[in-house]
Image 1 (tube, rainbow, N blue to C red):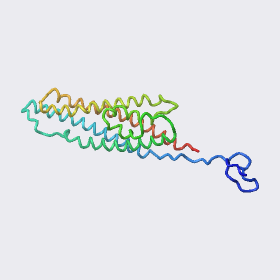
Image 2 (spheres, rainbow, N blue to C red; image 1 turned 90 degrees about the vertical axis):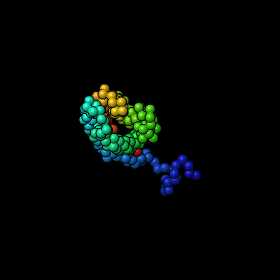
Image 3 (cartoon, rainbow, N blue to C red; image 1 turned 60 degrees about the vertical axis):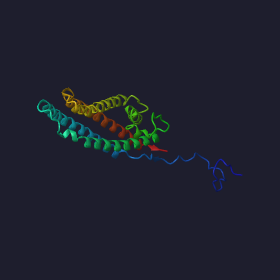
Image 4 (tube, helix red, strand yellow; image 1 turned 120 degrees about the vertical axis):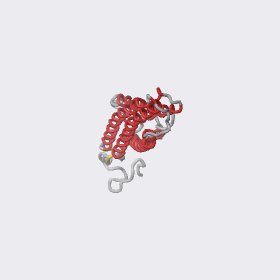
Length: 236
C-alpha cells in the first residue's frame, strides 16, 4: 500500500521516494517587470514641467511690468500678454508628467510587493493614481506612496530626509503657484500692490519647483537602482 504523503515512484524502489536528499528547487530570476524606461520618461516629463514653470516666471515679470505701466498711464488693461497663454503648456505638461509618473510608481509598487511580500504599505495600490488628484488627501498620500516604495526596510532613514525635503519643496511650489491667478483677479480692482507681487510669486514657485525636481530625480534614480537590484536576485 502506497504512502499518500508521497507521489508514486515506479521501479524497484517501490512507491516511496528514492533515498537521499531531495533535489533543490529550480532557481529562476524574479518575474519583476523593468521600470527603467518609465523612470526615464517620468524624469524627463518632470523636467519639462519645471521648465514650463521657469518660462512662466520669466513671462510673469513681463506681464507685471506691462500691467503696471498701463495702470500708471491710461488705466486700460484690455490687452493680453504671453503670460496669459501659459495655462495650456502648464496643464499639458502637468497631465503628461502625472500619467507617466503614476505608471512608473504603479509598476515599482508591484515589484516591491513581490520582493517584500507582506510589507506594510500605508495606502492601497489605487492611491498611486488617486492620491495626486483627490483634494485634501493629495497633501500627504503621494508622499506616503513614494515613501513606502523607496524606503529600505533595513535602512529606514536612508531616504527619509530626502523625501521630506522633496515633498516640502513640491507643496510649497504648488502653494505659491496658486497665488498667480489670484493676483490676476486683481485686474478688476486695478490693485497696484497685488500686481507688484506677480513676478516675485511666480519666481519663488519656479525656484521651489526646480529644487523639488532635483530631489525628485535623485529619488527616481535610487528607486530604479533598487528595482534593478531586485531583478538580479535569483528567487526560488
